[in-house]
Length: 86
Image (cartoon, rainbow, N blue to C red; front, side, top):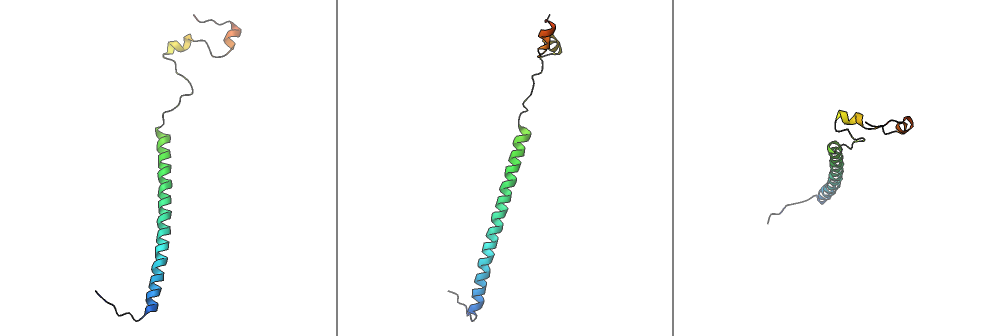
């Protein structure tokens, strides 16, 4: 087993304290980086869902142009004017 001749115990205690502080700061930095990565991932997932979602039509298109003109309007004015489809 290797041995060391250590004459400055105080220096070793300072080194130990510095290593403990470094460990705490490194852990805090890693936690902050993990949180930032998680937020970025969530934002990207939300963007993907938003961009790839099927559009929800607010109206229904007619099957053909002729079909559009053969239908009565959706208002009550057709009833008032007596309009009748062919």
